[in-house]
Amino acid sequence: MDLKTLIPQKLKEKFPSAEFEVSDYRDELTIKFDKKDIVEVCSFLKSDSELEFILCSDITAVDWATRKNRFTVVYNIFSNKHNFRLRLKSDVDESDCKIDSVSSVWHAANWQERETYDMYGIKFNNHPDLRRMYMPEEFEYHPLRKEFPLMGIPGSLPLPKK
Amino acid sequence: MGLEAYIKDTGFLTTQVNAIIAWARKSSVWPMPMGISCCAIEMMAVGDPKYDIARFGSEVMRFTPRQCDLMIVAGTVTYKMAPVVRKIFDQMPEPKWVIAMGACTSSGGMYRSYSVVQGIDQFLPVDIYLAGCPPRPDNLLNALMKIQEKIGNTKASQFQNVPLNEEGSKLPELNVIQKN
Image: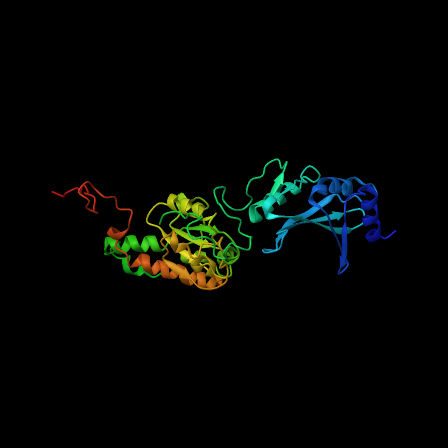
């Protein structure tokens, strides 16, 4: 069976109460669902013997600025077995800016979640070491948020004395 | 070389202390290759036989700042990197010079962004700003020659490494052995 029909079908069987929003754009399959199911869905996609999404290529986020669910966390995963890429999405609102960490599923997610936290300020529950990835520890802002000015906040990053 | 022709009879030559110290200093400028990004590739090209920085006495790239006279900052300096660059510069013995190689180092270049320092002159004393993205190796040699010119025109007493004595005077007292 084609993977593009198999994956949504298997997910619906495994998680009957969850809602999956499946879209296929430019031959890329994207599945969107509620953030509370993220760890279960991910570990199922990884451990299922017919799918085996063993590689977490990237985790990032989108800032929609004025939308109700302000952020979307995006997971790009890859199945070595089928040479197939899958994108998972989950909405996170600014009022509850948290999502469960999938670093227990893929160890590669550890640093990618740290990067997403650094750039967007989305906290990952149960993350083993949620520190900033790029910016200094004492930096107060999250640079990829829409309200952050391109040239930064003057004086927020200290320079050595001349 | 030609110098032998002048000294073959007597074995002496007359010059000024300033001139010969400046000549020695400018002919053997040891660079600290602060290669941070793509400009470093052109800096490496300067060391190869085609451009050959050895012709100017600067082939000894030292990877310890304690043995260097000239810091070539080659690449984009981010705010996170700035304390590191400054720390290495501070470890260089005086007198010392700085070349800001390329657009990024001189002005932030195309990285007009929160993370990139918009010109290293915000935290370093820069002697030469070198245009280009990246500058060609010939251009770096030109900058080196400009530095040599600058060193050649500096009197020995004007170098910053002359320690201040208690009165605040720049010249230390020398024990000159008098001839009877």
